Length: 78
Image: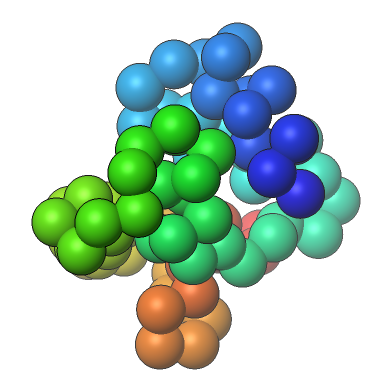
């Protein structure tokens, strides 16, 4: 799964790539902030993981993503 995340990141850039990743699949994956840190080549430090988590929470508040379970984020199904 991380190879797909990295490929989409390289194509889209920025945080837009998460929504782009979910759009490339028939079944949107649920990703953890830790997985996204690994995909973005960030060190697995709490400050990075929590920063990504807070950005994902903002996308949930904006209706772009859904939190399927605590800590798992995905694009809403149509």
